[in-house]
Length: 142
Image (cartoon, rainbow, N blue to C red; front, side, top):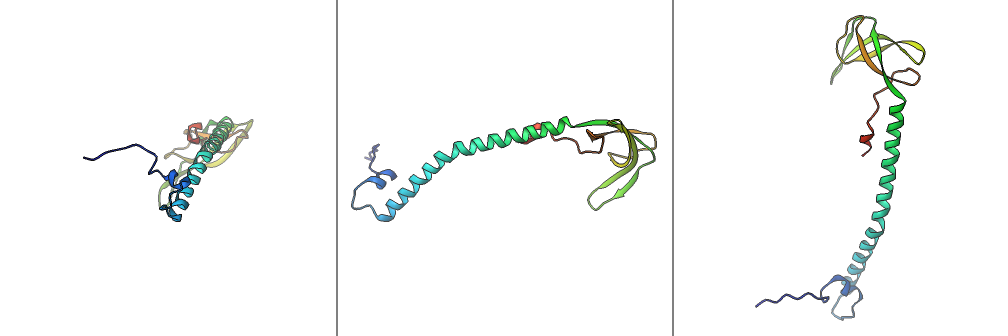
């Protein structure tokens, strides 16, 4: 018959503080290392969680500020698109004009596809009316 007992006789912390002469010095060192690791994890976990939360909050605020400073306007193509063949993809460039921030801008922009002269497309601009990349959603802070 096999018996099963729940006791404190075979745990690592008994090796740590026990006075059994059969416990080797290396076992005691191993037990101290395990106790130290458990203590470090118990202390570091809330700190890491707090740091992670503050970084997430800061990134969310950063993305929200970027979204507030960028908006879409309609640009009108002044000529037909130029196709630019790159090794990995194709870009469609067009000279366009748009009105933003009280001024009229005329630049070469990238279109999602081919456009004819006079066609309109939505573009992202910053508060000064200059071209900008679309803002990242605040949900990407995670």
